[in-house]
Structures are given as C-alpha cells and as structure tokens.
Length: 291
Image (tube, rainbow, N blue to C red; front, top):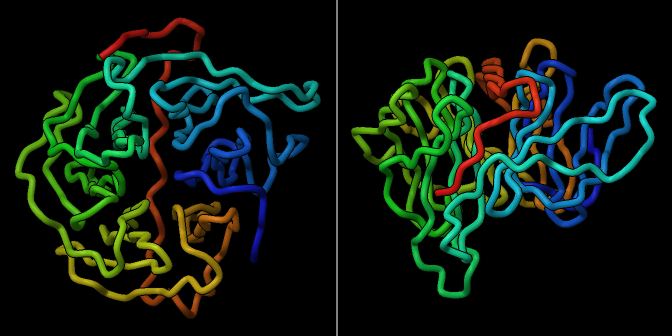
C-alpha cells in the first residue's frame, strides 16, 4: 500500500476518534488524513506550517507551529474549504530565535511532551524538552540540551520516556513523573544502527520501534535489537500503529509516501498502544503563557 501526498511532516499519528492516520506537511502547510473520514477531505490547508501533531479530547488537533503550540479546529462535513488558523496556546523559548518545535507526543496522562531543535547554522545544543498541559502550562523537563530533540516515546505504563538528539548520540531513557513533570535516572537505552534518530513508538509488549534513516529498528525492553527492516523506497520520517485493533504499522516517508509494511517483514509484531488524547479544555479559553 502506498499513498503519496506532498512532503512528509515529522509526526504520523493515529486518530482514534475518527479512525484515520494524520500528519502535517511542513512544506505545503497541509494537514492530511488517511483514510479520509466520511464526508471529510483527505487534506486541509492551514495558514501556518506544522511539524508535530497530537489529537485532542475535544476533537481538535494540537500542532507544533515553529516556536508555538496551537489548537486547530477541524472542518465539519460539508463545511466550505478555507485555510485554517490555529489558536495559539503558548510560545516556547521566546527569547531564543534559533529554536523550533521538532518532535513531541502525548504522555499516558494526556499531557503533551515535546522538544525543540536549533535551526541556526551553528548547530549548538540549545534544544530543550518540555511538558505542556492546560492545567499546569509549560514546564521544562530536566533533560540534557540537544541540537534536535527527537524519538520521544512513552512505555505502555507511562513511567519510562525514551528520547534522543537527532544530530548525534544514541537513544536515551529516563523515569518520568507526569504529575510533577519530573525526570530521573537518565541513561542510555541503545545505540543507533543508522545515523540520525527519527520518530519512535512503543508497542503493547513494551518493545520500541525506531526510525533511523532508511531502516526501521525493533528493540526489546532492555534495548537489544530484535530486527531491522530496510525501507527501500525512501528514508522514513515517522512511524505509527493504527487500525481498529491497532495492529497495522505504517511508515511515513521523508518524501511524502505513506507505506504499509508487509506482515512477513515484521516478526513478532505486537499491537500498538493508542495515543492518549491531549486533554484540552473543549472550549476556546485556554492557558496562554511564555517561557
């Protein structure tokens, strides 16, 4: 199976409410869905570009828009097509013009955890990791500074967080306390088989699936490599479980292809864990802050 629609965003997510995969196109300012929900378009145009997405409890989507997080109201069936404007929630690291939101996902308690990247020429490690919720606002996580935050994922029980610097190094892990936005016990999880850590996701058995250039790597709970699947068509940008039983694993290619991997290539594939919905207010009012 192959679907091709524009350039790929960083994040591919399964929308459990509308039963479709969603991903942003950071080049063409589009938000795509596949399969398209009934009476809904497969793509909607936005007034801004986004690279990170999470689905919300209200039915909206949370987007990483450069240096900001924003909520986007999705169009209703039959609604006239027009570019959509996100409601800005928070500006991240406002005093540092070089950083931008680079990766993120919800934790298992409905908070949004994300990181930033240095988009400047110097490539210094000035990126950080944050937790955002409408209850507590924006809180920085005490994790090492990075050039480009990536591979953020949470174990099925939500107590362990995996993360990486896409510019160098391997996959890291730490203990995670969602209520206090505290991390501890930071240590290596595993080395990379290919340079550059991309998106990562846990399955129901606690195994990690990691995008690394043109390879999808499966790790066991201890960080040992179980298998690697070569993605021959194009390098990968993201990966996500989806489908009614969360037993389909799709890869989003760096050039815009959406691929379903043949079952015989995936040995010991467990079902995925549904993304916890970001807990938004369900109304237009929200916490607005700057850090």
